[in-house]
Image (tube, rainbow, N blue to C red; front, side):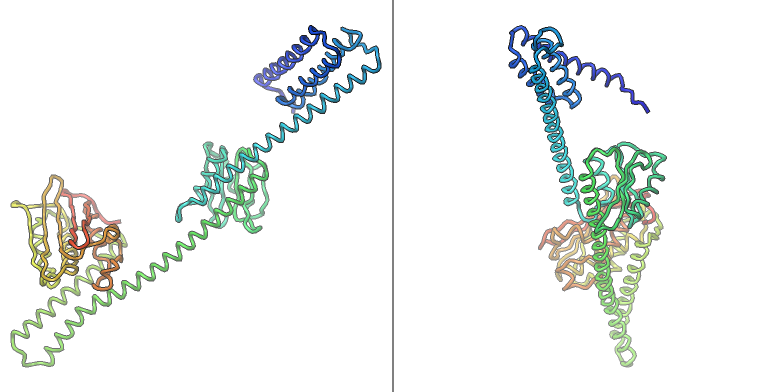
Length: 494
């Protein structure tokens, strides 16, 4: 195929040729007008040729050398204004001038190429440093494979980049230019490169594919377009990508191991807590039943007292089972609600009565507006949430301290607050107390619990489209605020 220069390239060649001819014409004119001798004129031509060679290509420098020799012969070698060389010694001068200009041009061109190569290597080193810095600063758990693909395209200014991770059989794309229909065919080529470890220079969509190796074994492949870096840089780039893939795999393995360890720890903690929570009412029921069976002559008052204990502890056991069931439904996304219009004051009174023994030793103060506070909600769910907040208030408050409940109506819904006067919750733990199984370090050793109660409350409130938060300062107690919308919203917890 014959190469045909474009109009822009042709104009550039013409302008450069005219520039070179202009420089030589100016040198010749000045030397001739000043009547310089042949030796001095020859030096001026050498200087001009070297200067031109320093800023243009080798071909232009060679042409300049021959034109300079021809002008030197015509204007300064006797006989003047002819190309005839009368004295054989002048041939030596012409050859010396030609040799000097050619050698000087070649040396200048080589120095220019070396300078350009050095600048290119410096630029590539800076780009590789920027990429490695981005890898080192990545956060654990971040999607590094996708990020490294974007970073390679962005930092190295590739128009298209594709990264294939063989261990996950996933391909990631980045860059301002889309691959379009060529993407599936490119993925096939990249998979083969990841298996064979061989690079492909003529991949689909004009991409060049390079195997990504770690320890001599291919673990993926990288495709780029256009290839605007050296072979050394592309090898360093694939090594960085290999390190990133290995780092990502190591982080995922460590995260999975930590999650499994935490899961085992939480399961163990939950089993211990549930065993303790279930054992307490069962022990009371068993003791009361045994006394009724073995002591047949108990006074009626004592029998009534034991019956009351059995009734209350049975209710407590039932609530524990209900909470466990609700937690399972929440985790499975199967929490169903039966919404209807309810009066908040009635739900508060019901929750206080059902909480029972957990509030013994505490005086409960209820503050609500004179009128009714109505919302559209599931009364059983809201009752369960309030019971949980009241149980926590009674459990963590000092004996004899009051517990305050406040209901406030606003334009969009109702705000219910439960205030205790216990030790309070440290600020560092307030953001975590609604997490499943989480228990404060200070409370876990002194107070029984499973760590799922507040999680249930949060999910119930969320299912109603509301919000829950806590405000507390150590030593002043904690206030849990639960806002519920007035209208029907929300649905199943998913």
